[in-house]
Amino acid sequence: MANLQKLQGSDTLRQMWPKINANDEALNAELADVLFRLNNILADAGNSNPEIVDARLGADGAVRPTLGNLVREVHTQLLSVLGIRDEVIDARIGGDGQARDSVGNLIREIESIQKTISYITENKAILVSFQAHAKFRAWQGVATDGNYIYVVTDRNENFELENIISVYSMDGLFISEKRNAYTGVDSTGKFMSFGDCSIIDGQLFVPVYNCNSGGQSPYESRVIRYSLPDLTLVSEHNIGTGVAECIVKYQNDFWVCYHDLQQVRRFNSSFALLNTYPLSQPAELEGGYQSLLWEDGYLYLNMHGSNDYGRLYAPGLDKYSFDGNAFHFVERIKPPTYGAGQGIDKANGLYYWSDRPGNQIIVTNKLKNGLLTPLNRESDVVLLGSVGLGTKPALYSTAGRRYLSIKGETSIGVLELASGAPDADGIPLGSIQFVDVNSISPDKRIGNIAMYLEGNTSNKRGGAIAFATKPDNSDGISVKMSIHGDGIVDIANQSGFRAYQSTAQTLTAATFTKVLFQTKEFDNQSEFDVNLSRFVCKRGGVYQVSCGVGFNQPAGNRTILSLMKNGVEYAVLYDGVSSSATDASFAGGTLVKLAPGDYIELFVNSTNVVNTFALSKRTFFTALKLV
Image (cartoon, rainbow, N blue to C red):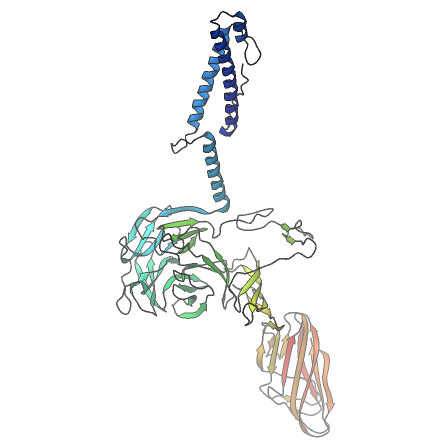
C-alpha cells in the first residue's frame, strides 16, 4: 500500500501542498503497478495462478488475502485523493471569487498583500483617502478643526470659476457645501479665486486673488474669514500684491505664501505688513508655493503640483528653518501621492493633503515615509536607540545617554553632512540640532551648529560655521557666534560695555572718590548700573578693562587712578604729580578675572579740589570679556 503523509487540521495551505503532491505521486505509482499486473492477468485470460498470486502483492511489499481486497484498497485511496484534489481546486478561489492558476499563486498573492500591509503599518504611509463628492472640488486646499473637514475650490463641476466650500465628516462623508462662498471682485471688477484654507482661532481663513480671471500683475490679494461651522462670511482684509495662496498663524502673527513670489510675508493681527522673507528654492513648472504650515519651529511649504495626470509628480514639501531673521532651506520631502501638490493641513497628529488630479483628500500620520531602525525604538518618528557604524555604540558610555558612534577602519571616523542645494553664497550644507523634547515652546530647539557656503567664487566658495542658541524663556534660537572662512570671528552680545560721564563732577581734595558715569554708549548684557556707576559681572571670565578721567589740575597736584574690585583696590592704573598747571587726562587699563556677581568701579584721588571733564573721550569706563 502507498505510504501516504497525513494532513493535519492545523496545516496551512503552504504546508499542505508538498504533502498533497507527494501523496499524489505515491498513489499514481501504486496504481500504475496494479494496472500493469492486472493487464498481465487479463492477457492470460485468468488461467495463470502465479500471476494472480503475484497481483495480490502491494507496492508496500505486503500480500493481500485476495486480489479483490487489493483492488478495493486501491479504489478507496483513489477516492480519497480525488476528494483532496477537489479541496485543493476550491482553495485556489480567492476572496474576490476569482480562481488562481494554482494554490501556490494564491499563497504568493496573500504574502504580497501581507507585505504591503506590513509596510503601511511600519512606515505609516497613506492611512486613508476619500474622493470629493463632485468634480474639481479638491482643486485648491483642505483644513480641519477636528470636527469637520473643509475643502475649497475656485472651480465648479463645469470648470467654471466659482468659489465653493465643501464640508465632510472626519470619515470623509460629504455633508454639505456653500456655493458662491465668495463673490467679491478686484479693483477692476474681476473675479477673485480661492487659494488654500486654514483653521485659525476657530474660524476658516481663505486667501483670494485675481490671477485666474485675467487680472494683471501686480495681482491683488485678500484674506476672507468665515465663522464655523455655519460658514458665515465674517470679514475680509486686503493684504497687498501677489497671488496669496495660504495663510497660517504662528507666534501671534499671520504668515502668507505666494504662487508667483518665492517669499513669505509676515503680518500682525491687524494685517499690517511686518516683514518679507525671501525663500531660496525656485518656483517649479506649475508655480510657487501653494500651502504652508509650521511644525516644531520649522516652516513647511508645499510646491504647486500638476493639474492632471501624465505630467509631473508633485514637486515636494520644502522644509525651512528660521533663525528669527531669515529662512534656511533644509530638505525637500516627497508628497504621498502624484497629485498632493496643493493644500496641506495638520490636526490631531494627522496630515491632510489636497490631491488636485485625483480630486481627493489624502490623510497620512507623518510627513515622510521610511524609518531609521535603531537598536531600540520608542516611536516610529524619534530615533532614541544607540547606533554604531563600524563599531559598537557608546565606546565610552554613560548611563542614561544615547550614542551615535562612528569608527573608521584604519583612521578616524567621519560624520559627513552634504547638501545638494545649488552653489550660492549663504547656502547651508548641514547642521546639528539640539532639542529639548520636554519644551513647551513652539520651537523646541535650544541650539544649532550649522555650516554655510561663503564667498563669491562659484563652485569654489569657502565656508562659515555658525553657532545658534536659545536664551532662557524665549521661543527661538539665533546665531550667537560665527567663524568665517577668513578667520574672522563674530560674537553677538559678548559681555562688554562703554560708559562715560555726561555731567561734570567735583572731586573732594585728598579723598578717594568714585567717578560717576551717567550715560552708556553700549551695554551688551545690561551689566553696567549707571545709578551705582558699577559693572556687575554676569558670566565669569577674564575681562579687559580700560578707563580714564580728565580735569584741570594745578601745579604739584598728585593724581591716583584706582580700579576697585568688590570694594577693594585691585589695581593702580595711574599715579603721578603734575609739574605745572595743565589740562590733563589720566587713563589706564588692566586684565581682571571676575566671577558671577563680582563688581568693579573706578576711583580717583586728587590732592586738590578739581572738576572733571564731562566728555566721552576724556572721562570713560569700558570693559570687554575676553575668555
